[in-house]
Image (cartoon, rainbow, N blue to C red; front, top):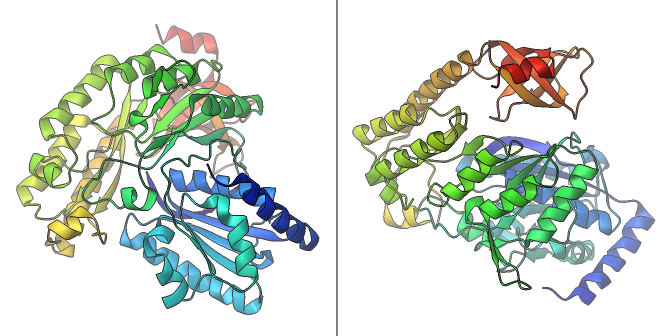
Length: 483
């Protein structure tokens, strides 16, 4: 899932060397009370990675700040999924450059997917940064910072087949204290023709089960009540226990995490349609605290375009998967990703995307027009031949249809009852709180005596296409309407 908006995040190798560099930088930073500022763009994985980076920097004496002018180290965690995302980062780097002019000695670093893809260009040609650090090289940050402080350029964009950061406890700065991301795997093996992720994040590798359960348990003990299990393709999670020689798949992981405590909600993202199994669906249905929501990107509703995209399924197969989800979990909500104007897409093929949306009845979607990414299979094999105005017109039609379906989804909620986890104060009024249903729909309701971080029972009375509005009810009333 993609987000164009930046956020200040609250944010094996030679271990002896790693400790040596940590001690070196820690001594320098403690003496100088150095601060770091970090922005994150793109998918949830990037936001989660920023929390890992914050932990690594914390270990060597840096403290976080939301004031960019007070920072000694400015980091931007980047995304390369679309050209617009990279353009946004470049604009921010020019802003950071002005901060450097006002405060000599400030270091600027680019992290993540864009760092891996553009590498030395960011350091040598554009000369906007001092550090370029790929998503598998965050442990090397203390070393790279020390090098940059000595006047050298710091670059490490090596991809790893082992790195999962499983022994790093992320710093949840800026968190609401209720929900948290837990990365369960890294990389991607799917090689969709439009996507840069396999090249910027490397091959799939899964964290060990015990480190995931330990992190989730620690979060629950600290008061968090929801975790989102993250991966480029969570359904392909697979870890082999060396002690028992048994293999743990994603369905097993869901079951283990759901049993930490009934009050700990479990979400996950993202699923690839080819890998989500009946075993996963049945475990979702079995445990009340596993949320009944699946993000299942389709990208296109036409089999020919799906083949060009190398999605490994066709239209009929995807529809059958949607039907299977609703068969096992009639109350499940499904969202999706759609790309308009992929290489060679005809008007008829575009209409297939609109029709599959109506069949799937998505509750919401992330919708984009095709943005060619350098060095992908689509870039090498197909011509980006759909005019921009056609891409935008088709995207407008997709967005219009999704808005209509989201409105209808929410209209049907009026009169329904939900158990929600209260996450925050409403943006519009301090007298209202907000939280999500199991189906990932945001509900706003009068505060009364309810508390953030607890569960509440709400009856839905009104709606917009984006939000449900309700009132608090007693648990007995809620249970009466669940039978």
